[in-house]
Image 1 (tube, rainbow, N blue to C red):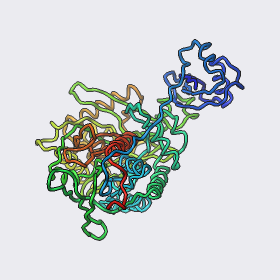
Image 2 (tube, one colour):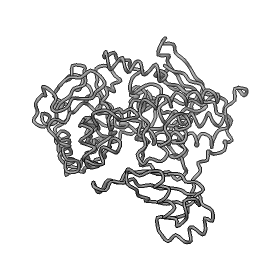
Image 3 (cartoon, one colour):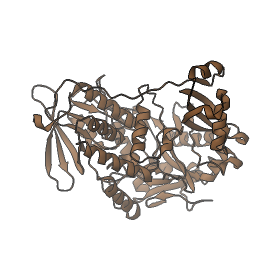
Image 4 (spheres, rainbow, N blue to C red):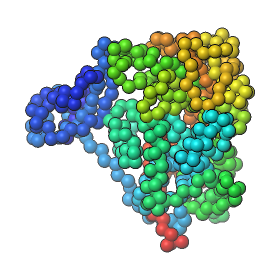
Length: 541
């Protein structure tokens, strides 16, 4: 295959124009193209009057060597194909099942690959299957009835299920895991354009179907799910620290369960605070890590479109995203996180007496508002104390304040009032697009003053890149506290913790920062397990 990079065309181009440009760049007739595949499509909006699509295209042609020899353009080269390969099974026999704790992206993809290759994993998930979970979440948004094991954070699909479903990542992977993960998503119902869009997304409405269909496939391959089952303890072999069994509790009946396990993957997510505490008490090495906190900010999506694309192109392109960063003189960073074009702010709480928010978009991203978390970096120095769990306590203090000032609802404030330290009384030129009960409250009282000042500096700085970003009636919602895990569980080159047979994995363990990076980390852990163990068989028990 011949690869063409930076093939640019107007945003209104046709398929025929694309094919004609391919032939011209290769100096061949259109009929000489056997087939082509778009590898990446991005929007080049650096010049607002000349917004274009930029493509990377792989082309199959006859006489490939001759075509490459004739083309002197540096945009044309031989395509390098990367094929993902799962490692062959290891030598250690499994006397007991392999258990995956958590069914978010990391756990789901880890279990998927293990099941595909004959390991028949047991997936333990404290929450409910995705469709039952959806009912609980919608009831919470409408009525305020929180189920602490079935919410935006917990349940099949993890926190990413109620998000934008973004699949872009900064993780560099030369083994093809990124593309393989996208192909698995498409195999189970995701739109095919995620295979080539530079900023792919599925949307929470489509992602639920994908997650459920991946579960169906895992079950067909011999995997087993234990929903509404929470891990409450671990047993280790007497002669050493190797894992022997997981102690669990049925969330419906309170029944205690003991699951003998050869190994366990801890894909517990960044909100499994009780599990972090249990692991710490069981002697797991853990470290407090830096993360970021802030507020979710809403703007009219149309204003973001015009700022990003210009007025003429804005009407022809999908809802525009943005990515903003600033490094301040006080040593803190301020940046946008989990930007949701045409989306909703959502109440993402998982604990009684505490409020946390997130953002969510549907596939079509056709809502009136854009929203993003604007967050300020915090380090263990901000947490107080010297425990690895101090970051969790810091999060909880912020969430408790948010609950108090909102009287149990998501507190909101306009940016101008936030800066001036007064409570808002009404929205400005536009209203909030939010899922969950909400009220106005003094968000500026939640954070230490340095974080408030840093947030405001960031907002004003971002307005130099996106005019109007710091408008006085920009709607703030709080608190955004679950941006990433507050802890890291160290692991060795074989991906095991200091307790043999236990594999920390994904965002909760501190090794990922989004759906795709978590999925890829789950794949890495599945590979490590496969390289060590033979597939489990009930007959050997």
